[in-house]
Image (cartoon, rainbow over the protein chains, first blue to last red):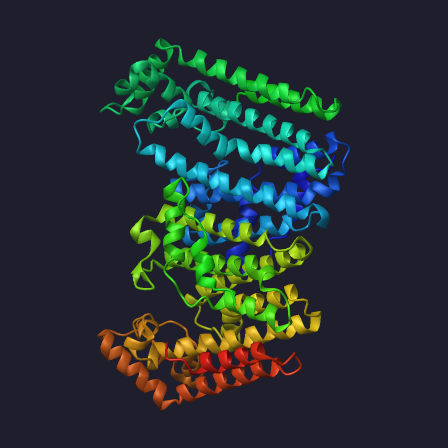
Length: 309
Length: 309
C-alpha cells in the first residue's frame, strides 16, 4: 500500500514566494492521522482498482481537509493546532487567508491529475463535498446564536461538516476502483455513519476523555457552552437553563455540567447513538466484496467508536 | 452574443444557509465591467467556436475574479467596493472568509460544466491562473516592506496579479473554440500585454484621473506611498527619499509628489510603457483570423490604454 505520509512529504513547498508556500508546508507537516487519503486508497483497492489512479484525489482530499482547518482556525481564533501555533499566530491573519486560498487551489491541482476519463465525475463529487463542508461550517456558526437547535439539526450539521469528507473519500476511491453506482453509494453511506459516530465520540472525549491521551485540552466545549450532542441531549431533557454560563470558575463549571450529564444519563444516550451509527456503517459493507479491505473498514469503524484520542 | 450579466443574474444564491450564500449574491450583484467573461466568449467566437461551450468557464472566471476581490478587501481592510460596503463591513470578517471560500468552490462548480472533452486542459489552465493570482497578491504584499523593488519585478507582479486572468480567459476561450496551440498562445500573450497596459493606466488614473469620472478616490496610492509604476520610475530616477512619507497634509503630499513626477517626466515614461504594451498586444493578433471579433479586441486594447475610468 502506498505510504500516504511519504507522498505528502514529496509535495514541494520550497517555491517562491515563500510567504505564500511556507505556511502550506508548515500546515501539512503537522501530521494528523491521514484518515481521508487512506480511505480513498482503501476503497479503490477494495474493488480491485489501481491505487496509483486514486492517489492524486487522495492527496487532494488531505490538502483540502487541512485547508479547512487552516481557515477554521482563523475564524475560531484558535491558537494551537496539533501542538503547534496556528498559521495566523505564527505568521498573521492575512497570510492564513491567502495561503489557505492557495491550499484549496493546490487541492484542485492535485485533483486534476486523476485519469482523464475519471476526471469529470471526480471533480463534481469533490465540488459537492467542498460545498457541503462550507455549509456545515456556516450552520455551526449559526447554531452559536440560536437557542432552539434540535438534535436532528445537529446531526445534519455534523454530517455536512465532518461526515461528507470521509464519505466522499470512499466514494471517489470506489468510483476510481470501478465500483458500480450502488457500491459507490454504499461506501459513501458507510462514511456518513462513521463520521457521525466519530463526531459524537469527539464530543464525548471533551467531557470524559483523558487529557494526556486525547492530545487536546478536555472541557473546551463545556467552557464555551458549545452545543454538542451531549449538550443538546441534556437540553432536550429540560436542563437548558442549568447549562447556561454562570459566574463560576472553569473547574466548577466543568464539574457542575458533568454532574448534570450524569444525572440525565446523557453519556449513555451518546454511547447508544455511537453504537447505532457504527452498526449502520458496518451494515453498509454487507453486500460489497469481502476481502482484507472490507475487514479494515469494519475494524476502523469499531476503532473510531471506541477511541480514546 | 450571450448577455453575460443576464447569465450571472440567473445564478441562484437564495439557497440555505443564507449566511453563506447571501454575501456571494451581494458581491456578484455589484456589477463591474464583466471584461473577463466577455473576453472568453469573444475568443471562442473569433475562432468560430460555440459560445455556449465556453459559457460555464466564462462565468467561472468572473466568479473567481470576484472571489479574489472579496478576500483582497478583507486583507486590505477596504471599506468600500463599487460604491457599496465590502462584505466584511456589511457582515463580518468570518463571513467574508467563508463565503469567499465557497465562492471559489462555486467557480470550480461552474468550470466542471464545460464539455467533458475540454475539461482536463481547461481545469489545468484555470488552476495555473488561480495559483499565479495568489502569487501576485503575495508579491504585492511583500513589496510593501521592501525598499529595493525594481520596475521589472513590479511588471512581473502585475503580470501575475492582473494580466494572467485576462490572458487565461482568452486562452480558454480560444481552446474551447478549437484554436490551435500557437493561436491559443497568441491570445494569451495579447491578454498579458493588455493587462500590463491596464494596470499602469490604473496607476496613472490615481494621479492624473478625474475623481468624478474614475469612480474611486484619486490619490489613494500617493497617500499610502504605494509602489506603483510612477513611484518606481521616480525612485529609479533618484527621488526615493523625496517620495517618503512626511509630516504633511494629504493634500500637500499629493501636490508635492505630483510635482516630483512632473519634474522627472514620470507621466511620459508611463504613457510610453502603456503605448508599448498596447502595440505589443495588437501585434499578437496579426496572424489570427481577421473578423469582427479580432477588431473588437483591437478596439478594447486601444480603449483600455486611453480610458479615463
